[in-house]
Length: 175
Image 1 (cartoon, rainbow, N blue to C red):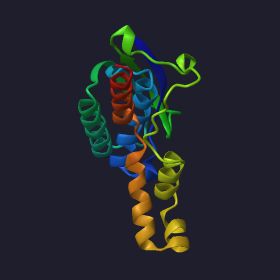
Image 2 (image 1 turned 180 degrees about the vertical axis):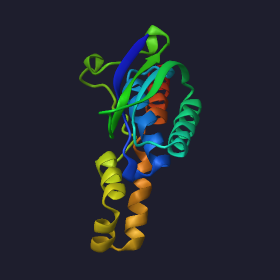
Image 3 (image 1 turned 135 degrees about the vertical axis):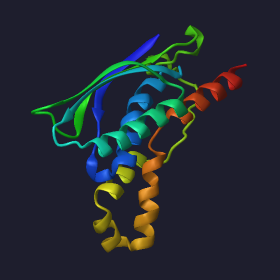
Image 4 (image 1 turned 135 degrees about the horizontal axis):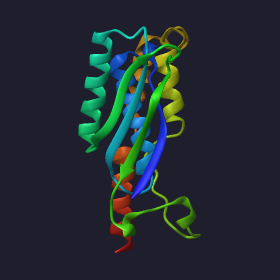
């Protein structure tokens, strides 16, 4: 079993669809680098008083959908609205990965001569976040077409599928 615990990070200016997607994938991406698939998640949502029902429903539907896509069951949690809570950190979550010990990987296991599998280009997360945070600046500097293309980079930030594929490819290469 591998666990990771991090804040639930929701950024309203990204839009609720992107915010929900980002919140789940940033949590799962940390855990999946262990080589094990994210299996369970617990979530503690400490929402600001300003959140309205429709906004929460949209956010939760996206978060639930993404957990399902990844294969993570939401096994416990808490949801409440509280004074003093505000975006972007609206609680915390623990991702739990269950798997075979022989599938577990860690950076300390790397040895000279090992093959490295690279699945993303440089600065994908920074580029995606910059594009959705400052779309007008990107459009002014590079044009509307490039700005829209840059916004699509946002959806490439998750490493869940990449990490699990890399682990399988790595084991295939070793066999």
